[in-house]
Amino acid sequence: MAAQVLIDQQLWQQLLALVLASAIVMGSPGPATISVTAVGAAFGLRDSLRYASGIVFGTILVLLVVATGIMAVLAALPKLAALLAVASAAYILYLAFKIATAPPQAARLGGAARNPILGGFRMAVANPKAYVAIAAVFAGASSGAGDLAVSAKLAVLALMIVAIHLLWLLAGAAFARMLRKPLASRIVNLVFAVTLVATAALAALP
Image (cartoon, rainbow, N blue to C red; front, side, top):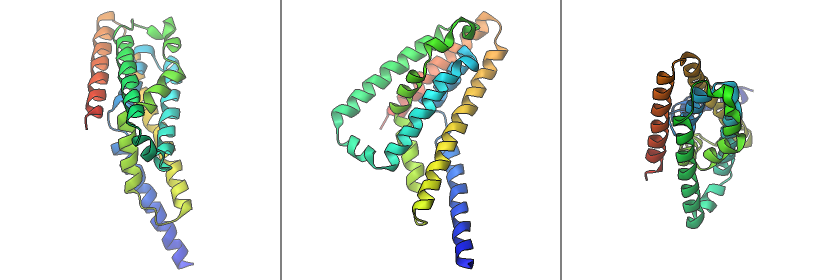
């Protein structure tokens, strides 16, 4: 009985460490998190939820790819990696352009139609930082407590993915509510667009 309690305590300690590590590593600025914030600022909360949902679904898929070892197989296919890199760069530039040119109160003009779930999903699965960050966090967690621990860690990381991107989205949406003047809106959108491209470029560096 005491041994079982000890195992449970160790599991909880591991899960707490996993939450802290994921918050720091996965929650740091990157192409996906910055894009969620930028879209929220440009189009408002309601019309950015579909894009954010796509980011979450795609990032959870990345988590499963990393956890099941599929990433190791994909890494052995350089042509596929290059194709993903080109597709990622193209979409990031396209999204940065849309954010930079978004008019004030863009959410009222159909911003949701310009940022669908598929767009967020594409960003997530082609985001190099997601694979590196998730692999680092997942590998850093001890797997000595068995299958239950692995399942619990996957569940915790999935919840952290949702929470992290929701917080970044809320932060961006706060800007949307404050930006009423066209000039202020344009400046903030341009800053987010440049930041998005910069973080994507940094994430792609070896």
